[in-house]
Length: 185
Image (cartoon, rainbow, N blue to C red; front, side, top):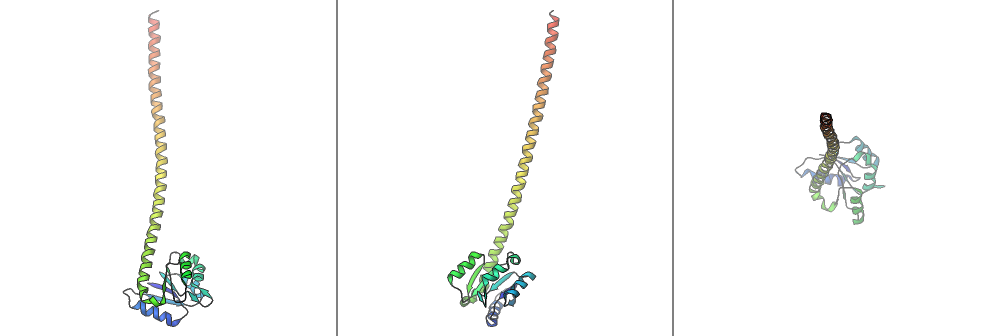
């Protein structure tokens, strides 16, 4: 799994590498420090997850999140920080950031990553199902319209047949009455 790690501390980056190396999954991390490097890496793509410190010099993880709107698509974004308050963590989650983990709980990082990826898979499956449902509803609507047209055409055809049958019967009756009236004269 390719992870883009937005971290300005080499020591904290090595701690993340060490923590993830103990997990069952194989992770490859690319560390970037600046907002420009982050944006460039996001534009190149190929990452399944972004892991970011909250405070990074003159910008925050939320700034990075917002700056990469066009490139991030559905990439999960986890904040791993020790310098973030509860209000900032809640704001980050409201912005669409996937999860938050305090650096003191770094041993839980593989589990948090797996949970985030599982939730992302569920969201992706729901999105796919919603699109398929929308297509199905469109097809049903088209089919209902076609069915209504077919019913109206069949009604018109039946009405013509009834009209022709009744008209023929009335014409025959009129001819019969005309012949009967001439026969009695």
